Structure formats: structure tokens, C-alpha cells
Amino acid sequence: MSIETPFWRAIAVFRVCSLGYALVLLIDGGGYADPVAGWSVLAVMAAWTAFATYAYARDRLRGWPLLVADLAVTAACLLSSIWVQGFGGERGTMPITATWVAAPVVAWAVYSGRRAGAAAAAVIAALDVWLRGVGVLDLNTVQINGAVLLFLAGVVIGHVAQLSRRADALMQQAVEIEAAGRERERLARGIHDSVLQVLALVQRRGAEIGGEAAELGRLAGEQEAVLRELVRTTPRPRVAETADLNEVLRRHASATVTVATPATPLDLPARTAEELEAAVANALSNVRHHCPEGTKAWILVEAEDGAITVTVRDDGPGIPEGRLAEAERSGRLGVSQAIRGRVAALGGTVTIVSSPEGTEIEMVIVAP
Image (cartoon, rainbow, N blue to C red; front, side, top):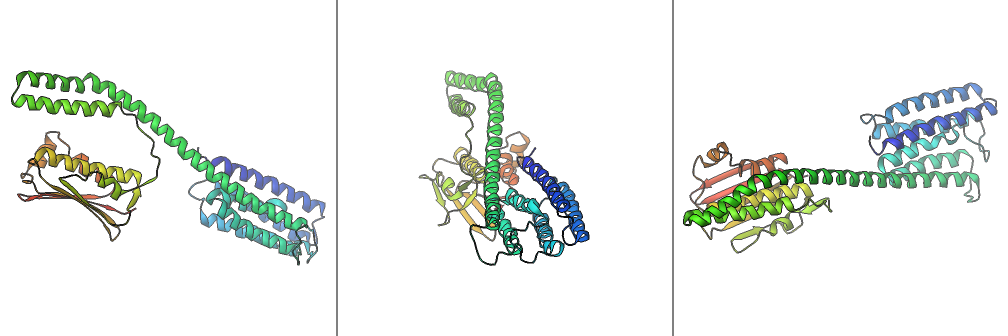
């Protein structure tokens, strides 16, 4: 159930109760100056109460068209008091709608926050003050007090609705982090019982055999350390919703890696920036492992025409023809998953161009 559901249910109850109050006033007033008109307006209010209760309870119908229609119908019913009651400027007269006019104000506030609530309140309050015949602003009148209360209700309820959404988002994030932590612990147990033990064995046996086996053992030892750190690290919540891609990628700058980014920040959703950074990191890892020592790499970031392009280029010997397809068939998914898979998940594309003069990997995504 959405965090907003209780709000919409409360608004529905308020509409029904306010409709009952309007009915009591109509009966007590003997149908007002024009009973037929009075009962007709009350019938419209009842029909709209039923429809609004149904529509606001469904996500696919709830939106600005419904909110605008709600405000318009309420304003029309409010203005009908001139016709129904015929009070023509008499101070203190309760309109036929009574408190029913507050429902769209609260609906606007719940849907879009305090500013929308204040805007709807301003419309209804202005009509109400004019309708009751307040020609000169008098801060001591009941009419003005009612308008102020309506305005405050829109602002306060809108603020509370926004706080509730934020709290719901934080709670959802906490649930996801907890679930990720449990999954990490499960994977850590399985990895410890299999992969880590194999890597430790390769490291030990490689050191014993010596020669090229020693180098394989050393690499196995490094990967064992990295994997142990990975399974030991607990997931951290994302504090910021966005991240500057330029700043994230500049961390990879070194003596052999040059990073060129736009002069202005390139803010992206934090998750998008993380995935792009991980793809770039994998591309640089391939340069270190498959190119001669000292091979230089360049990272270029461009943002234009609604697209973001990240290019990783090196001056290594290039990728032999058929190597990528062979690696994918043999289960080595560095390029197919760590690079292409990540970018595809972001709705982007990857183009790889390789020659004896070097390799260029171009990653393009649509700017959010």
C-alpha cells in the first residue's frame, strides 16, 4: 500500500461528512430561497463526491486533469450559492457547500505539496470571501478567518504529505539495504567455501612451483584479497540522489591515464554515474592486464545533443580479431557484461573499435 493511500481515504471520508453537513444546513434552511436549485446542487455534490472518491482511489485516474476538474466543480457549486440562497452580499451567510469546499484544497496539497495546496486554497478562499459579501477587508470577520484556515490547511497538509513521501522513500531504501546485506552474507558464505579456497590454493601451489606458476599464484593472491574485501564490505546507503560524472571519473587519473571532462558539472542520478564509472574501471583494468606495461589511456567525457558519451582509448596493440567472441563463449564476460551489459541496462550503446594502434571503447547513454 502506498504511503499516500491513507491520505486519499481520509479525504474521501471528509467529503462524505461534509456532504452530510451541507444536507443538514439545507434542511435546516428550508431549502433556502430556491429549494429546487438547492436540492439540485446537493445532488451534483453527492454525484461528484462518489466519482471523486472512486477516481482518487485509483492511480491511473489520479492526476492533474482530475485535480483541475475537482477544483472547477467545487468552485461552481460554491458560486451557485448566489442562485440557491439569494443572499446578494449578506455578511456571514454559510454557502450551500459549507465545508465541502476544502476537499479539493486538501487533494491538491496531498498530490503535489504545500505550494499546490496554497494555490487551490487561494482560489476557493477568494471566491468564498467575495461570495459572503466582504467588500472591505476586515481581519476580525469570520469570513477572513475561514479563508486563512483554508490556506493554512493546504500548506500544512501539503508539507506533511511531502514529509511522508520522503519517509517512505527512506524506509524503502533501508529495506533494500537490509535485503542486499542478507544476500551479500549468503554469497559470502558460498564464496568462502569455494572460490576463496581455490584462489588460496593456487597462490600457495604457484609459490611452491615457481616460474610462471609463481606469477599466476601472485595474481590469484591479489584477486583473493580483492574478493575478500568485496564480500566483507557492507553496502552503504546512497546519501546523494545525484553525482557529478566528471568528478567520479577524475578519480581514475594517474601517470598513465588522462581524464578530459567538460568544464561544468555533469550531474546524473547516482546509480547511473556508478554504473558508468564501473564500466570505465573495467575498461582500464583490461588495459592494465592485456597491454604492455606503460600503455597510456585516455578518458573523454562529452555531453551534447541530449546524449552523454564516455570514451576510453588506449595506445596498446589492440584486440585480436575474434578475441571478444571467444572470451564470451569461454565465460569471460569482462566486456560483454561488465561494460556492454552495464551500459545496456542504462539504455545506452557501446561501440568498440580496435586496431594495432590501440582500442577505443565508446559508451553512449541518453541524458536523463
